[in-house]
Length: 251
Length: 261
Image (cartoon, rainbow over all chains, first blue to last red; front, side):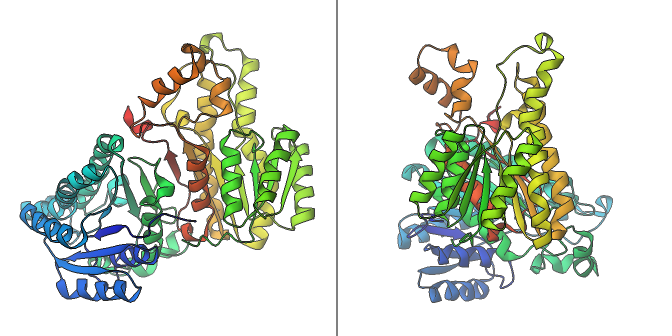
């Protein structure tokens, strides 16, 4: 399918991990012809991903930035616009979760971490990039949420609240931005063996596939395929939706 | 993106209308390299769509059948399998609504047409096509539901119920068959300028089609109605190799119409 992605400029946050969704998204977009900017707190990781994007024959740039910080977002976007001139696609992929624990044992600090890394980061990125998309009268934003945000997460109440917040935030902004030619949607991944899973209870990742009708975990490539479709010309009528890619685990 | 659809055989029901979603789905799949079986109650319409598929260089077969009648569907599927040997993709697209009418005025006799055409037909066609998918441990089923099934539409209570039924049927069947290599999902279109809309009484609420279009578009965040191509693209994505981890989902392709409320 011709996705019309050739020559588009994409920014993917949290794409420094070498086993994460972000990297797979970045590489798939590059394969479709996008130049891809790689953000991460881990600059070395971002550089590795950027090098792989360049190997695919596309331009790339690794950029360090804390997505929870508005000044850092402003600095990042300024740098990107100076080099690439525009941002067509923003994938708010960066996220994280405090170690699972019962709600009553969660500290205020845990709460702030979960909300800031997942929800405020998405808000910050959208706030900083959207004005440029509105000027262009075109753009695609995909926010990575989670099944936890749809059916709740046991022992991850803060994370679940943040991910549900991303969905509601995306739906709201989607309605505002659609008349400007900008599509905002979410992708909700299932359980995957990414860096994120290092906090999972022992045995969960090994045993989880047995509980799934599909008998396998979600892969980074599954998520990359969904994101790529959503940011394409083929999905221009999709507004404020959550594309659940989870092997059937999420309602 | 290579969707891996080359050489697949797809069956699309209700693809005879020349302005409908079904034809958009059939042509999009054909462009991706599928051969297409077109089923419609309107045999002439089905032939027209099939001719366009052949013009794209793919094989096609037009079959006249009423999807609410299992004998007709079984016969059509048998004929299709006789020619193509397999059906990789089933798109249950056929559907229509009886004219809008308040619930209290609806008679028991009026229950069946909406339920049969929109919900029972999905059951009948799936029943006919699924076994050979399970045998081959591979297949994709996409059921076309409607935003009306999520939101409910006044004066179309039975149609609304039928479309909601399609969504729940999709989710249940998906869980049964994903372990056997078959993905079942649903696409829920928004308002399209199709025969469905043109034949409904809604369009008579304003004087001329251009006014009506303007009126409708104002209520859709993206500022336009859903096109057959929009539904075709989403269906092709769900029918492809790249969406294998998507199971029992319902996707609104509606320009933001549903979330507008």
